[in-house]
Image (cartoon, rainbow, N blue to C red; front, side, top):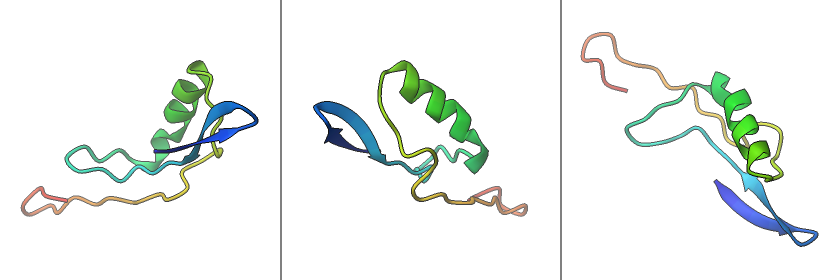
Length: 62
């Protein structure tokens, strides 16, 4: 997540589901939005960089 200030309050300006180790699906955005809203943070309304992660069926790695 990238944060910025908008009219004197903190807001999320950049958010992605790309991570190392934990690979959340793009469908998790509603949970992310709810958490940000509960924290009082504005957000862009969706992932600014969404990554579709696929697991190899042979070795189980991403």
